[in-house]
Length: 258
Ligand code: MN3
Image (cartoon, rainbow, N blue to C red; front, side, top):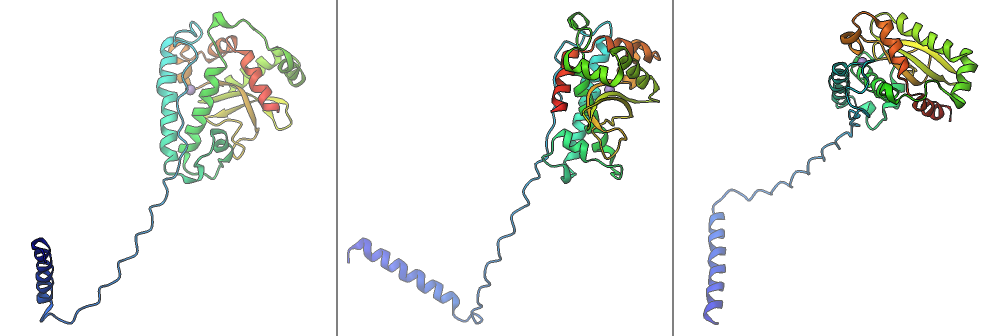
């Protein structure tokens, strides 16, 4: 046996003896308990949809003099941003909305929902996203009136564009307190005007009487106009209707009638 092998063998023997020695005189050897089963894997994290504040398509001062810069900055950067943040927060604890689109969430709400966080903030996010997209800088409003298929639908439902604008104005001025006035496409593909309180909208079929797809919305919360117009909601509504992007409203109409 070479020296190195001798050392190795001796070392193994010694170790065995030492181990054996420790067992001598011990209590009867206890059978080792089988290892506990591994803990169940943690539940998969629920993938809540995360919504984002859409950027404005124009500068904050672009809508002047109809809507002033400070109002746009606060309305978009604070109010709308808060609806998005609070919606995302609420969705973290309400598994039933996981992975759903904003429209699907709105359509799934019911009057029985006692937690208003999703209703108010999903509504607030949808409503304002539409609001910012259907208006533009006054100088960029080249098309003053609707045309094409949208015009045909307006004439069919209201008789004339003037009648539509009057109904929208009446709905906006008639909404007591905070809320919205809407032009929507109903299930019968016909246009109708309605108003809703707070951040409700016509997509909320479990909540509103008149159900449809909104294609134009007028925010009549005071935060939308008070800095510039104070209590003169009528002046704000008339100004707002003068900067409508009818080409964009027509796009929403086309999507809604498919
Ligand atoms: Mn608002």
